[in-house]
Image (cartoon, rainbow, N blue to C red):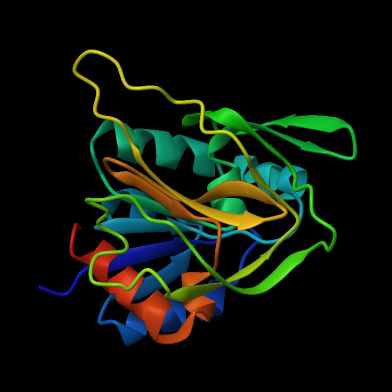
Amino acid sequence: MVKRVVVLDYGSGNLRSAERALARVGADVTVTSDLDAAMEADGLVVPGVGAFAACMAGLLGVRGEQVVGRRLAGGRPVLGICVGMQILFAKGVEHGVETEGCGEWPGTVEQLEAPVLPHMGWNTVKAPEGSVLFRGLDADTRFYFVHSYGVREWELRPGPGFAEPLVTWAEHGVPFVAAAENGPLMATQFHPEKSGDAGAALLTNWLGVL
């Protein structure tokens, strides 16, 4: 069956690039801010580029945080991309200003400590065993990053009856979270829609769990 995917339009992100990349791997894609469509789709993609605070304001403006929360409460898949991943965390700190995120994961998005920022270009990642997103991809596979901020510490810990999320790391000056898989909630700091065949393989893997 063809999977129906909504790319959430909240005024931020590479909407058409994401749409084309998902269509390339066989999804039936709609770009919209309609919350009913976002709820009913097999999968929801939350893109994002630019500043954490601006993206969060845009998401709140279309009540996107509500649809993300409702989908996850019902076990419905959500994929965050770049700043669309960052706003899933508890907070972001930019230029000394703290902005509250969606809070689906604990943790802080902060500036990377690196000699050159932004981190822009191709980089490898270290995916954990059992990863769904990186299934079938070699360890030397490169993905395309464009960012100056990231999550440098994973704070969500497993507990009774709670499986440990699968966290993928990359490094630019310091280690940072490159991707996370936590039940129906998955996200990548890099841009799969700009990562060529590697990104297409990852998106195909995600469609396989919808």
